[in-house]
Image 1 (cartoon, rainbow, N blue to C red):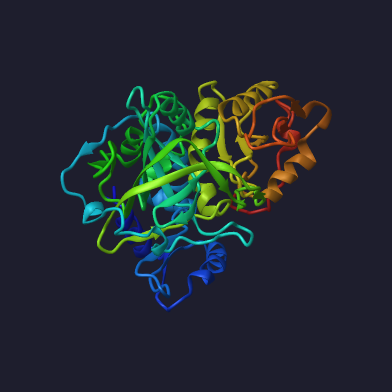
Image 2: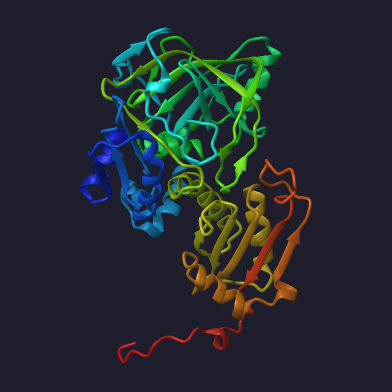
Length: 435
């Protein structure tokens, strides 16, 4: 597989999926252009940003076809290959020399605001690092963890940093506080695409997600030691921010437009102090808008694989799955070839149990296209018996930031035809003499 993000972008370019914007553009104009670009579907590079030395890129997961090219398979097989590989482990290897350390900048030699990080939402508090992958170590065990955390730019060497209470990163931070020391982290910009996907897998605590990244890639991820902290980072990334989160230091952060397309209110969040920046001689900055197709494909693809493998472990015949049907990863549509009348209810419960953020799940027959909302609604209109086919699960864990209790009730829908009555529910197909 490709060595790094640059070779991935080259692959997209060779297949006609990369747009390069070389005309001069103001940084403030880029967010709207990214919205237009998302409709286009192609990955994009802006390499002539007024007042900035470096370019930025976006939409690296803008189409499911990109993952199919990466894995060398048909689009329909991505979920299966992903599911198989995310259960495997390929440990990283250490290297001495790394492109990401071609340039080393110490305190007073850098200002992170000189990188083209952007303000995505109209009411966002300012510019944010949104495409950074955070690497931290468990202070007790040394096990590495990968995560995504928004970071508001607050100065030349300082950002806000939001941790979810359920993230391993928050657990590591609490352990460090209990030990009376700061938590060291590295923020990786422009990591290998498989590292980004591994960071979204959410394996059991104690699993090093860089081992999963290697399995997804099919070969080890090359790492290099950081210059100022005890951390290993991808050698072929674009930029590394080495820093520390101090115990009990909190500052106001936000508002910020999140993946649900609402603004998160101003709140007290952690602070990252950056002590060193390493980078390539000509780095590019990755940006991701929360809730974009780029974002949802990145975060949703591992969850599709996770849910499908869970159902298949129960001998449920899953023919297709789509957790991106609503433009986020809170609603899932699953097509099955039903074998027993009541197995759909078990499948719904298993789907909810395998991904706690999942709020709504719709199961349809194998002849329904789960990538077409109209076809899903057709199944609900013609095959759903609401009296028997709707399952409501109250008081369940869901998406964590939920002060109004919107995500604590699960909705399961069985929109499949009655078992063993297929002759009466077979869909009409257009007449073709050769069929």
